[in-house]
Amino acid sequence: MFQVPLVTSSTIIPLEKYWDALLLYYSRPHLVNRKITAVSQGLLCKVQFNSKGIELPELLNRSAILYELRKKNSWDHIDQELLKSLLEPYDKNVQLTDVSIQELRDYSQEVFVSIRLLFPRLKNCLKALEVITFDKQHNTAVFLAVSDTDKSLVAPPFAYQIQLASTSNLRINVNSFENADTGHAEWLASKLFSKLLKWIEDSNAHKPCIQSLSLIRPEDYCSTYNRLKETYAEKLVQEWPKKAGTDPQKYVFEDIAITSYLICLWKEEAHVNFVDCGCGNGLLVFLLNQEGFEGFGIDIRRRAIWDIYPESVNLQVGAVNPNSLFPSCTWIIGNHSDELTPWIPIIALKSSPRTNYFVLPCCPYDFNGLKFIRKNTSVSTYADYLTYIEEISRKCEFQTNIDKLRIPSTKRTCLIGKRKTLTEEEQKSLVIEISAFVDQKISEKFVQRSAIEKVRNCTQLDRNLISGIVEICMNQLLSSQQHMEKSNGDLWNKGVGVAIPDLVQRIPKDVLRQLKQECGGLQTLLRNHRYLFEISNSIVRIRLPPCFETTSKYKAKPCWFSRNHPNGCLHEAEVCAYRH
Image 1 (tube, rainbow, N blue to C red):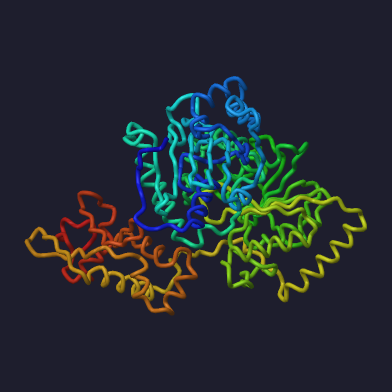
Image 2: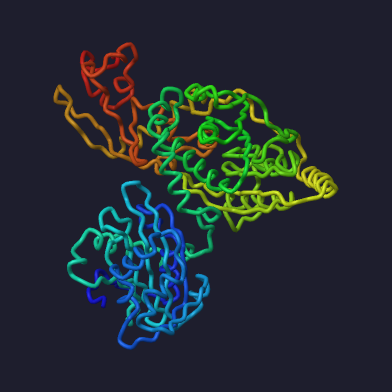
């Protein structure tokens, strides 16, 4: 059936690593296919099918699947009946047995079929039903995405086979030369194949990990996210720069994604009353309020960005500390709540018997407001910190779940604590026990964040220190000479681009320690000197001095190049935008 090989590996692939990589792609297709935002698993079952001369992928074709789907009038409910209707005409005794992905991994001879829905990242793409046939005996997997139309499909519109050949080479095959000569086939050969090889080589790629959106219905999340993005994103992105110096593309879409997740999480709740502790820019509160959820945000200082929200959005200036209680709230939110993060489950416990929490940890802090000290050095600080917060949550007798959000951040793992039913005596006893636990953990008083934000953008460093760093970087850029001609015929060395890590190597360690205390470190300092340096893709280059014709606003300022560059300024005094 699949006679056209698109691409074949030149190396021998171990069987176990082949299945590890294949099942990683199956479990997390969005890691390769950026058109997919979520997957809703319908069924995964072992198939006992006896019909001589007919292979399952031949029967599970686009026409047959669409015919059965149109009879159902719905794509949202996928069960064994759909698969039976496709196979029983050829084998009335076909047997289907639900299995887990681990059971699929453990079998060595059987055939399995998975049917699921793929949801698009962009609204102009269509969701698709994907049917995958795994043949453990022949080490193949056939993927077929089906939709009412082939236009704007989130996956290739034809079947393709991933195979470990009898020679133990990895191969991707299609069933016709027509399909091989398409952009989709090019994606399979260049993107998917290279990713599979990378996973095969990377021993860490197959470690168990938390699946994203595992506690909610992915289809609900996708529709909610697209609706919120369409409703709010454009105006917020336009208004954001007027009041905030942060990147609207990151913050707006991140908080739209978090809001979408919370709406889906709270879908079955009769009433929600939330508090966002350390609400920062207040965007999450704005979105939840606009969507009809009662609640407020509180932060130790007001943000200028609050001015763009309507007065109905409840944002308060105030301190949240370990003794704060919110008895009327059913949910306490800690969205990148930093110093408050370990306290969120405890505040929820003490607030009321019906108070739950949602926390998205970022910077790791302990109970005393100081940086968390890693206990398990075999994992990252972030992973160890998540385990620590989970431990606190379970001690507080919360039903604790962990999930991953779909946000543009590396810190996207959240913890959700739901209250268990406790008697009044059990509640009192638990509060006493937790208080003793916290007392053991802290030896110092809780350090609350200052209401005045400390300036940490490299502008407060000693001037001589800054000048020294600038000189080191400039000398390094000029060390490899690349000349251009000045107007008077002399040569002017514009230097070459150098990667930021290479510049870091040239700076003394004691100076680096001071820089690391500043947000962004060396990169921030260089961006503060944008009249000297330009940075693109982490490569630093000398910025050519501007001409007076281009801009005259700098003419009162002295020209750095005329005083410090070995060849003086690129321009004559009357041409340069700066004063010579």
